[in-house]
Image 1 (tube, rainbow, N blue to C red):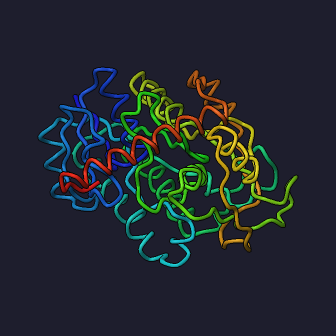
Image 2 (tube, rainbow, N blue to C red):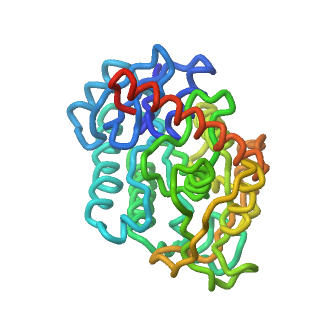
Length: 337
């Protein structure tokens, strides 16, 4: 049987696809390539270019490849963009997920892993935040993901589909073997932006808000290495295949770093200084959000391997240098990256 990975040519999805391929799993990828790249795929993994909301195409793909499990990454993910374009986010993240779930149910898919987000918690009352905390998203992005969580739970009750919801905290880093990494032009992930600034690819790094109720006034986040996150999905898949119950898990390390601490780590690891500009807060940004990850560690036996900020930055920096070379080579032969 086969695993369908939606958004599998994107940042997190491509790491997942490599890990599945390394494990000998049969995989097929569906991606519209709006933020993903065909070259990020392992050799031999079929890539179907299309939308998760295209129900006839998804149904045919599931039937052709005998898909029995779906890992659903495909989504728009930029919080400020969601504030500016809420309807676009509800269309892409919520409506397309609903369409995908309907096809999955009608096609007999029994296992579903959903890429959710810590943004469903909003600005939590306490930190670390557990899975049973109040859900109060501060942005359309968080709301769009929460709506899909609600749909998935209802689908599980009505149709017997088993699912795992993984709520990501701040994902960073890259495949240590440098097969893939965060490659989206204009990406907003802090560590990627800081690394680009260190490499002279950006004139400056903007920090949004220095008056939060945190130790240094800047936002605090729980940064998780993308390979540890991919491994959490593998643990979730094993759980479902073993007959495990549907569940929701936080994916984070249980401790956080401020924006200023991340900037200093990038400067330290890269050995390069860069200009930092302080600015006002952005809408939709909570002051501090750190995961209580006890549940996933206990129930799925998940154990992080890359829980070190400098190591995360080191892998991100190495990938960014390689990506610059890939783009240089692509321009030389007229290809798009």
